[in-house]
Amino acid sequence: MKAVQYRTVGAAPEVVEVPVPEPGPGQVLLRVTAAGVCHSDIAVMEWPAEALPFPLPLTLGHEGAGTVAALGEGVTAFAVGDAVAVYGPWGCGACAKCAEGKENYCLRAPELGIRPPGLGAPGALAEYLLVDDARHLVPLGGLDPVQAVPLTDAGLTPYHAIKRSLAKLVPGSTAVVIGAGGLGHVAIQLLRALSPARVIALDLGEAKLALAREVGAHETVLSDADAAAKVRALTGGLGAQLVLDFVGAAPTVTTAGAVAAVEADVTIVGLGGGALPVGFGTSAYEVSVSSPYWGSRGELAEVLGLARAGALSVHVETYGIDDAPLAYERLHAGRINGRAVILPNG
Image (cartoon, rainbow, N blue to C red; front, side):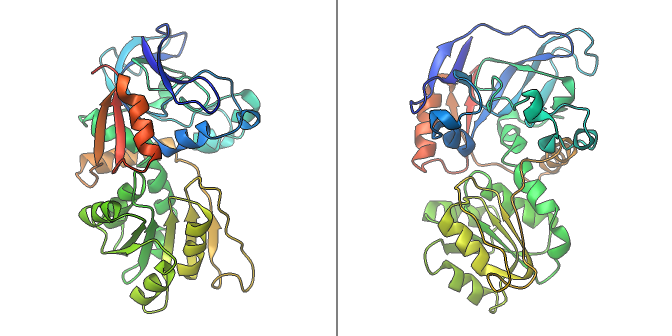
């Protein structure tokens, strides 16, 4: 089968031929219908060799959807032909966090060498994907896999980040979204669907700001040196009750801190390497800063439920598997508006 692999540190991903895996006991083999391309992959491919926590080659793709092609011994929850989405942050299934469905915070995954597909385990950018356990599959329930597959990360991650702060998004509140790309444009829709907050979106380019307005942002601001002052002016000097930074670079994190209101939540989602100091006099009173990771299995089911209700629509660009390296090239250059989706089987 064809697969898109990161094979050499510092090199571009390649399309190669690899054997089709066979499911063992408890495992499920999927014929992949859609796989998402994410900035996290770019971050992984920029790590030096000594920072890579897993061996190469690695089949990429941590957003996957497909149809069940074969079942390992003992799997009864699904049947061949079922259309499913893959929950990506695999855990041990037995620790206290996994028992809550929070496998994204599994307490034993590093110790046991458990890694997500595409981020250590073979990923979804291939014609077939081997899923380690049936509990990591969620029925699509009639959703278009091309539209739904980005929701397994680009939907789940902002949903988790927003859900924990909903109590602060009361009528009259403001939420700021920094970075209106793959995750950010979904976050805007989630904020509009789940809260009465006014949404202000920040980005570097007009195309991304236009997309932000299209999906529901009330205001858009160019993310430059004047952005914080403009957001403060839009909020009457008070700032925002929730700031979501989907870039995470030093300049955007600085902006996030500068626009946070008293008792605000600042949530750094992006992998840009920035950090926000917390301490008396460095931020508004009682500002909370967090850096969450992905979301729970239950939250993925909730996100897909929102999509079925018509509350979410992901802006996607589709590519065949042979053009996956081009999709990564365009993503790295900032030329993907929304989310790139690979169709491994056409």
